[in-house]
Length: 606
Image (tube, rainbow, N blue to C red; front, side, top):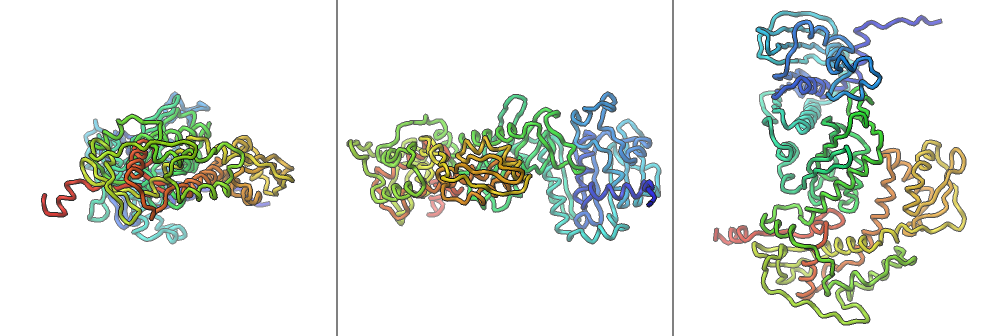
């Protein structure tokens, strides 16, 4: 029988380091989080070769005396759990600091040459301890200002199996920069500097407001192309900056998510963001934003992984619903804008202009041409009917005469101005009081049609259920069936009726009317995969949104269509009254503005 032995402490720390210190950026994260928890107001980071050669973090926090430093380098020793919490079953749930596990420093010291220097504010001098791959090699007095300085060198030098998996200095530096960016956004009250070699690559001052800090770190354009969030529901609050749909990226690397001030990479939050932007972005484009979610600590579990970048919510559905509704509400207040910087005065007048419910007569036929609540509002029939409008899309509705509105000739205070003509029978040229406006007529009308379809309840018609003549059995693995069964009620509300049919099968009784021709096997597999990835049935919602978007595209005025002046003005006025009119259904801008100052510059008049 094999003998069971206790592992040496040094080996235990090296094994633990595999989870805590995967790469230099992970070690940097732990050191900076310690500085934040120590009450620092300024944190300076220095890297050499992307952290492969050296990482140094200096702060002006509370500091440590020699005895405290010795205990800090012991495994599972921490100051983050107050005395009154230690021993309580709920201690971890009530932690308000970034760190609390007591694993980081001994793990780092076991796989590198680690130098820790610290001086309390009331001490005359500091103290230094040097640990080389788990062995104490030096300690004694040190000269440094109040605070703490931690230095990591020769990382994984004695663990070659781990070092060969490290990437190039450039890649490791990019990971370290991302860590500092996220922590700097989470704490705009703290100043951060980052030096890579001889070059300073990031510098932010303490006590900045949140929008300025986010814009400075993510992208300066975000301040002019985003909306502020400040929502509350019960004990949950959501703040931050969300980019306009037209201000998007091809990758999701510019989505920064925080829970109770902790940077996280949580799939539920990512899925909520995708759901909020679902009908405003193409599937291959991603929003740019920084969201800060705060909720009671007992409602979120941060002790999921040693790296503390994953969390679990007690009521995940409520959190997701809050984020989706909060984002959509914020975007609806400023999303008539496009990704540009229009005149501030015009934008103020635009936002303050009362919304009229009545549709302009020149556009009324588009929105009154079909009863979308009828059972025959399928996609195929819809497409034919909307195609029929392409030739007469602006005609008056049958059965009554409609008097056209008088065409305005002066820009007055209209944000999008008065139409003056068309370019290439595709772009409307309008004169505003403060510049020229170009409008993509197809993209703009596509958004208007989609919003009218939603307001008319077309989404309910699209999700109407169509029963299968013979219920179909879909065989899947048991965990996938469990996920689908848990979401059966929500899927039924979307028109997909399913029930459990044994341990490894689901019975499909009906499909959404708009997806009646879909393969039930593939449909359920895609939904099950989406549930596994995001924890919610986003895929079916997006599929139904795509159907609505297709209907809107077919029902909108085409590029190349000649429009009358009253039709162009009707389109402009409807855009000014319609939410999300600043971008089409694929996240592209519907209009751009050239200020008169810019026009005068083109002709050398300014």
